[in-house]
Image (cartoon, rainbow, N blue to C red):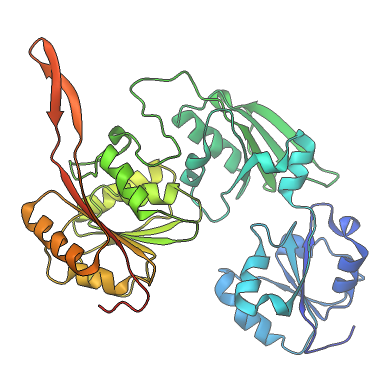
Length: 415
């Protein structure tokens, strides 16, 4: 083995089948390395002919990557990854830290590919949710009747936890299969339903396959569809809630796209931020709420509706906006007349970003009219009426009209 400062870092995917399952190129990268970095379980899979120094990843892993790579500068480095390094693996972190041009990635079939092969599922038809380093409620957003979901487990207790979540969410009839040690001689599949999951914890290296089966609809339980405008009863709130039909129109004006970041200023119950994040798994949001009780309620709503990554900042805007990452869109649902709030939001917004503000008061409406005159965009009034009893008959009960201003910040716009 030769040290070579110019050699890229080899990122080698390895499965539960170990050395026997590696390609010739992967074996060559490992036998030619001076240092092999990986998890203890992965390092134990290497045979004696890999004579490199073996270094286990410290915890937490990500902050340690630059220093660990720098400590072995000038030596041939190989990094072991589980399965496909670029699929929920260390490959992403290494690419972000070192750059793709400094890596040579040698993938192995992922656990998802193995699972679909065993189950007879088309890979493109299965939703994948990783619970490695993520809370269990992250799975909730993928639960829809008839869908197939593959859950990447964090440990041996994950299958029972998944079964518990399914029971809580009305999916107790769902079939669960736990696929352990995929690709190895110790491969095993256990089968059951979420409602009466009978199996004790097994191997920690497992994938949970879920065939979602919703229990008969309960009219009291809100249906959680994919588009904005979830039923108001889906949220815990104290009245500070952007109501369903206005919420749908507001999300349409905000126009979320994958990877974009929303500031939800004056979060209330967090409904706008929650449904922004439900639009796509890559959408991100920060909600700012000055009331601590409401801030805690927002967190509970985010967990209940499958977006536990929603960041909640407790504090009064505009001061609480300082230091937040640059937003792609801003929604202002409360506190419009606070001095400097709209100015701060507009200044922070990236060029091409969208700002949407709603109000029901005349004072805030006058403010939005001035901003509309200055910056253009669209100024609309949203009015919703609901059928309600009128004596022995039925009539329309008008909700308070909502004035909404929305605008796109042009390139080169000044605060």
